[in-house]
Length: 343
Image 1 (tube, one colour):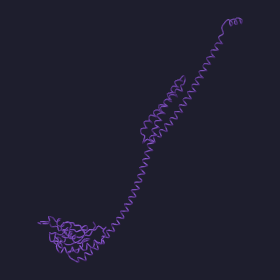
Image 2 (cartoon, helix red, strand yellow; image 1 turned 135 degrees about the vertical axis):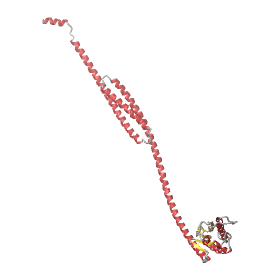
Image 3 (tube, rainbow, N blue to C red; image 1 turned 90 degrees about the horizontal axis):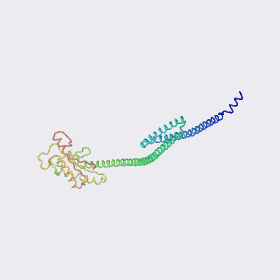
Image 4 (spheres, rainbow, N blue to C red; image 1 turned 30 degrees about the vertical axis):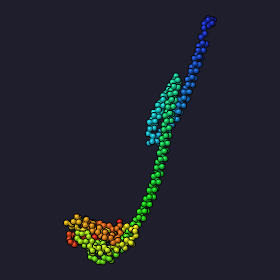
């Protein structure tokens, strides 16, 4: 029986070695494919890691750009559009990164597709870098404009400070001049007051205690009847005699008062309240009072009183001393007043 089995073996084919060879070849092929898969997986992992680092750098640059743009927000509103575009680009890049990570997780047989996506990612990164470069260039331009504006503002502030300083100095000088002027005016007033007192004292001595001449405040008051007839502006001889005395006192006063004191003797004409009736010369009390004052002034000039030291004024009936409707009140209101004053 053993002999019969040996004969079958000798006469039949042995398949076992071929099977072993085929199985070895298959195992080697599988190992080779796994090795290739691991190598591809390693390189793709390194590529994705590099892209993540590039994305992190890009995020840092964009964050820095965001800070710069927030500082220059008031002067660079147009950069907000650029920033929005950059943020939109970043969002799309991040989405692409997530998609690549998803591809990495399902990497089997997708090596070539991952390389294409990596190329697209590089293009997106290059585009974002270009946008970032343009934004940085615009920020630099804006910084230069802001620096120029700050220099102009500093120059304006310096000019304003200088102007305020000059203004303060001018105000100080004006205040000093005003104070000195007030002092000078006060001195002139005091001098004129002294000469007025001297002049009035001299007139009192010249005129004596006449009932038709009296002193009211700082004025000598003459009744019109001393100089004129009723309704007339022609000087009477008696009035001329009084004015002769007054003229001599004025000429003497003019020689004593310093020329820088601008004094004048004002001659005021006044009438009573009753209107002028049937006068061929004067149609109103205005004309009569003014004509009487002018007559007195002209006569004083003829006696040597400087014309520039005399003033004639007519007040008609509108400055009464007594408002009673009596003859005595009318008589008091008809008057010639002399007042030594400043021009």
